[in-house]
Image (cartoon, rainbow over the protein chains, first blue to last red):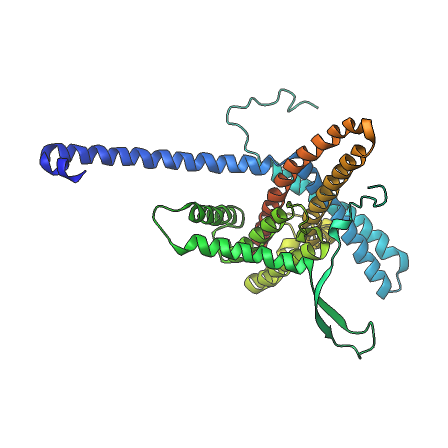
Length: 127
Length: 259
C-alpha cells in the first residue's frame, strides 16, 4: 500500500486531498445519519405500541386517584375528620389524575416528531 | 393433564432455595424475620452476574475496531447516555450510573423471564416498587440538596392567580406523590399480565390437544401464543426503556424545578 504512494510524489498530494475531501464527506454523511437516527429514535419513543401507551395513561390516572384516596384516609385516621379528608382528597386525586394524563399525552405528542410537510388539518380552527 | 389443572399464577410462586437464618425474635416459631435465598434472589444474582460478565468482557480489550461484544457494550452505553442527555439534560449525566444500572437490570431481568421455566424478577410488585422508590427518594433528596426550598417551586406553577393556588398546589402534590406508584405499577403490570396471558394461551393448547379429534382447534391458541411471545419480547425491552426514560424525566425535575 505504501510503496506506490512513495513512488510518484505529485499524485500523492492529490491523493491526500482526495482522501481528505472523502473523509469530510464521510463525516458529514455520518453526522446526517446520526441526526436521522436521533429523529427516528424520537419517533420510536413516541410511537410505542398502542397497548403500552394505553397502559401508561391508565396507570398515571389510577395512581393519582389511589394516592389521593390513601392520603385522605391516612389523614382521617389521625384527625377527627372521618369522612371528609378522604372525600376531598379523593376528588383532588381525580383532578391530579386528569392532570397526569394531560401531561403524559402532551409529552407523547411532543415526542412524536411531526413530519415536516404535513398539511394542517382543515378543521383545526373550526368549532 | 386432567388431574393437574393449569395454573397461570404458579410461575410467580417464590420458593426458598436454602435458608440463611432467622433474625430477631425470641426463638419461638413464627417470630423474627426469616430470611432465605429464594428463586427470585437467584435470578437477581444471575441477572447481575450476566450484566457484569457482559460489561467486563466488552470493556476489556478497548480495541479501536471493536469486537461484537465490545460494540454491544458501547451501544448500550451510548443508548442510555443519549437518553439521559436528551431527557434529563447534560447535568443529568451524574446520575448516569443509576439510570444505566436500572435500565440494564430491568432489561436483562425481563429478557430472562422470557425463557421457559425461568423466574421473572420484575413480575413482583415489591421489586418494582423498591426501584421506583429509589428513584423517588433520589429525586426528593437531591432536589432539596441542590435547590433548597426552591425545589418546592415544582408544586407552584408560575402565573397562577392566588385564589386558584390553594387548589392547584394539593393537586400538584398528589400528582407528584403518584409518580412512584405509576412508575412501578406500569412495569409490574405489563410483565405480570403478559406472562399470565402467555400461560393461559399455552394452557389452552395443552387442554385442547387432550380433546381428541377436536385437538386440531388447538392451532388457534398456538398461533396466538407465538404472536404473544414476539410481543412479550417487545414489551420486555420497551418497559425497561420506559422505566429509564421516566427516571430521567423525574431527575430533570430534581435538577431544574419549576415548569
